[in-house]
Every structure is written in structure tokens, then in C-alpha cells.
Length: 442
Image (cartoon, rainbow, N blue to C red; front, side):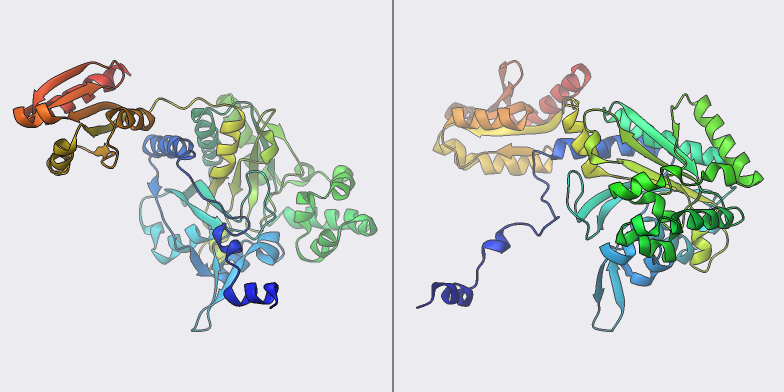
């Protein structure tokens, strides 16, 4: 008998009890960080008057080929593409921006008040090399301003919102890099000079950059290969080649940032590596602790993207950030999360008779809108108290033999240990009263 053949016949299940490479589980220990980020994002949405948009996880693959770009790493190497039974080629979305613009055109959002201010929060997929803060399935949070006037104040407002988000979740040492990559008038002149520069050094470039010379010259400035990074130090400066209109636009963006007292560093080699960007592009990094994840967020202006999809020239600017990267930075910087006030009571029982009555009490509390946790399978009151402490609830109910006889229940303050006995018909009022008091003093 061959053990290997026998194992293959039975099926080796060891690989199926772990997540696929580059995918990850979100466990309860991570939840407080995600809740904090989502809570801050919701506050920003309300303050700056954005609206939520959700798009399908699957889109036609051509949507990204026409917008993100045939010569980009995302389209050439990282997209998950599948063929449907009907023969359509679909892709798991590798980013949100093309989907947002497709929805804008499909639903004629240009007929609504302009600009449209939209935000999103959801999973994206890229077959990338997994590393710190980078996964093959990850979550993007982003804000976009579409339509209206091509006003540089929207570029500055986008950057303001990104920095507000990062600062509010507790991240320190934020570093903003910014550049302008011009428009369809001045960019061809720069591309020609860039090609001439790199063609003279073609023998020193990595294989990917040799291909980029033919397909996407601007992405030569985005290569992370160390030898290519060294080669491009003497590359032409984009800021010197901007037309008058782009130069004026960029100057205004920087003036707004100065007014906001947002520090920035000009980086004439920052291009973002996607075909649809024009004029302002920016990325945010973290200095010191937590800086190993790379850019935590970035974006820019993409006025030509709607045109690429058959629409009209539509001013647009926005950014996205990887939530997993933000969480990594928060952990590295030991960000203290706000104490969570849990509006939930913990029901404990003492004895078999109380255990039998507990489910009925849970049903009654449910009917009154009081969320309940419990450990009905645990017999020890001490073990139940320990579970309540671990969950972080402020109030607990204790049901014992005496309470069953008296038709009452004990209300315990888990922070002070103070216990009081109340009739069951008053307990809902007392719980809500204590929640108000605790909420005002936490």
C-alpha cells in the first residue's frame, strides 16, 4: 500500500483549512480598529456632506482595461478575471474609481446637484505579492468629488479629508507627497522627453520597465526596482514642462494647502501609475513607526475618465486608502482606542430554576429593545461574571431563586460592583436610565 497514493485518493484537506494565499480573516480582536475607522469615516461623511455608493464586486474586465490602463500592473498582472457561462469576461474589481464613474454615467448622476460627493467602503482584489499591510483581498475606503467646476479647491478639499481621517483615528507623523502630471496638452511633450531619457538607459532597466517603454512610459517613474529607482534620479522634471493652465491649477492647489497649514513635499516623480490620472496626484506616507507599509492612501484628479467610458469631459478628483494598512499603522503606533460604551446587558443565572426562567426574560428584553448577552451553558456565577467582564458591558442582570420568588431581578453596575434589586416590570426603565447616566460620564 502506497501512503502517498492513499492520501491523494482520500483527499488531502490540510490546504483547505487555511485561507488562500493573500486572503485573511477579520477576527474579533481586530474589530475595534475597524469600528474606529468606520466611525470616523461616517463622521466625515456627515460633516462634508458625502453620500454612500456601493458598486458590484464583479464588473466587465474591459471597464478596467479602458480606464486603469492596458499597460498597468493592475490590469496586466493583478486582475482576477473569469469567464461566465454566457461567455462574458468579468473581473473582480481591483479598485473602485472606474466602477464609480461607470455608475455615474449609467444612472445619469450628472442630472443631480453638482458636484456629486460620493464615498465607498468595500473589498477589492489584486493578485499581488502579499506583504505587510498588503493582501490579495483588501478593503478600500475612498472619497470622490465628481462633476461641477474644474476647481483646484476640490483637490485641496480631498487632501484635507484624507488627512482629517488619518489624524482622527490617531495616526501621527503623516507625510504628504504631491505632484502635477499635466494634461493632454503638456503631457505628450513630457512623455517624449521621458522616453528619450530612458531609451538611452534601456539596457539597465528591469524587464517590466523595458515593456513600459512601449506601453506606459509614465509608469517608469513608479517602478520599485532598486536599479530603476537609481536610474530615474536624473529623469526630466515634470513640473518644468507644465502648460500655463496646469501650472496655475497646481499653484492654486498648493496655496489652498498652505492656507490649511497642511505640510507637503513636492515629488516630481510621483505619477500614481494609473492611466486615468491628470494634473494633481498625491500620496500619504507615515514617517517612523508604522512607515513600513508604504503609502497608506493616495489619489488625484481624473478629468478624462468619463470620456474614456463614452461620456463627456467631467472634472473629478478623489482618493482611496487601504484599511488594512491603516490598522497596521495604528497597531505599530500603539494608538489608544476610545473606550467603548456597550449598550448591552449581561444576563446571569444562579441555579437551575433561574436558568429555566432566563430565556423568558431574554425574550421580554428583546421585545423592549434591550440587547442581551448571556452564558446560559455555564453553571458558575463566577464564570458568568468573568465572561461579562471580558465583553465589557457596563450593566448585568442576575436572576436567582429568590428573585424568581419575588418576581424581581438584580441590576449590577459592572464598573463599581454596586447591586440593586428591582421588580421585573421596572427593569427596562432602570436599564435605560443607567445607560444615560453612564453615557454622560464615560
